[in-house]
Image 1 (tube, chains in turn brown, orange):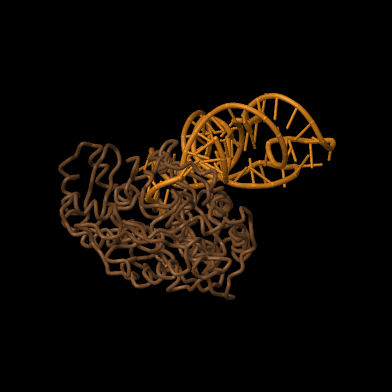
Image 2: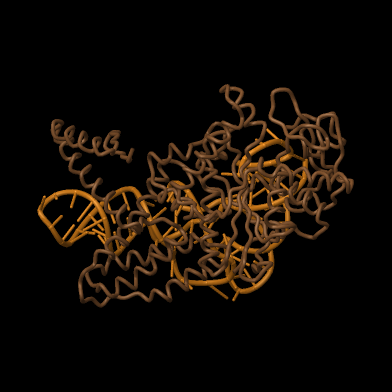
Length: 457
RNA sequence: GGAUAGGUGGCAGAGAGGUCAUGCGUGGGACUGCAGAUCCCAUCUACUAGGGUUCAAAUCCCUACCUAUCCUCCA
């Protein structure tokens, strides 16, 4: 398997540190609000990648951190008038709900930063003792100058960095590029005791404390979106390698591209974002997954309702073919596909830097072939072809494979269709009656123009 | 100013020296009680511009222009 490693800027043959076992870490969210679909793209990409690694026979420990203490959390909690802990708890739970709805279920452990304060402090102590960190009036800082490889991952020459353009130059730092490891306590903020007095961790140190407790000094894969490369991932490398003295933190660095609204990155600060929670009222988790996975993971991708709709058309064809194959009851038929061969081809493509786009390109061709021959497929042959779809679904989770859930949703959809015919005929007596029946069964209906959205309350 | 990715058909997006990407959309047709689903055909001088290398370049090299991201926080 080949992976594009950001560190070397090249395609490398992937070799796990321990044969058969992979330790993968992906930066998680700061839980101060609902996550948006841009965040979701990254999580879906790495979820699917982890699923593929497992499908390829590796045992994967997939670790994700949860930043549950941070300026944003404190500020937002203050605005609403609740405790930071209450806020982060709430949005951690909301985040997990989103992940479930998006079928992101490959993470072995979600590690909350505040549960690793002890490890964070001991990392800072080591850095301090070794001379990489210094004590200042408002915190403990990492001295970037002391780590000569700083900038290697992002290709930055630290002498060329433009200081003070966007960041306020702090008097407390020796050098502008230094970053904070420990923030000293300020009135009204949560704090923990430490050798430097009460305070709380800086952002970058959480991740290395968590990975070092669970993985040790080194691990296989570190993932995240490109906007985290500098300075976050550089800082992680600097911290951990300064502590361990080793040549690597993660052996492979994988970065996913950004989701764009128009020509700009979707982000909280620009305000041009769509929450996952909102998107899920319009689209299914499978539709969002298919949209995100049907492009190269490392490229930026534009998001819009229009693009979602066209992507959904393609997904429907796949899902319809899948459904039709499952419903075949004929004993005779001459059409066959060699599922073993197809799956081997898919693996080949995925082994090339997780080329999901080519997989779907090939799958679409096969879907057309299947549909063309749908009347000439025996139950036996359909069973074999379905193996292909099961393989696809194990990795991408884009099909509704749960039989009961699938049939119930189909039933609901048929009832809604029936109701639509009444609405079109302006027979509102009957359409309202159907709506009431559905509402009574806990199925909520929302009309908007010609389309109908529904959800189980 | 520096760094890192890019600039591909109406749209979204793969590919990375020679053969069809794929999907959506659009037009036509087949099937069908209607619709839907599905299939077929067409949309085939698409690769930012200008130079160069090569028998052959969207793909390699040079130059220019443009875009995004990072150099606070961000997935």
